[in-house]
Image (cartoon, rainbow, N blue to C red; front, top):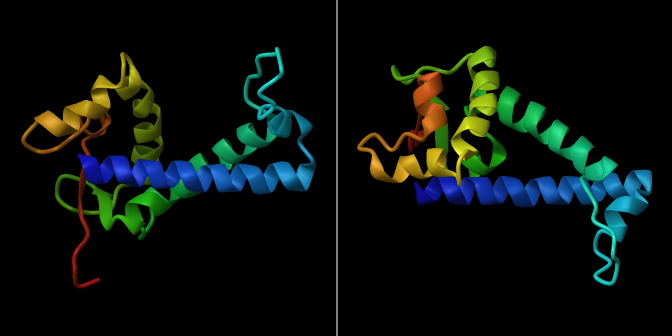
Length: 141
């Protein structure tokens, strides 16, 4: 379970870097103003945060997971991969469904994610819903 948390943390850092690059390229004042600790305004997601979250989710989570990479950059760095129960590569549609199932795993209070820590197969709720597994990559690769 903790290796999956680390992979998610790495993906978060990479998304943050992508957000900063996009914010710089498009001169997203709203993004840079959210760091103003003296501001009284509450901000939602800035344009650059929305764009980077969409890019990262579509390309690096959905497409990478359904490709030969079998996981996001965070999962690849942590040497884990997402597979079907028979250890084969998952489809694009299953990968897409898995991302939507993340929402269910997050409600309430991330219990669906924590399930990976207390069940024998180390599967989170979104893995159970989509019939996937997260396993360590083959050391021979």
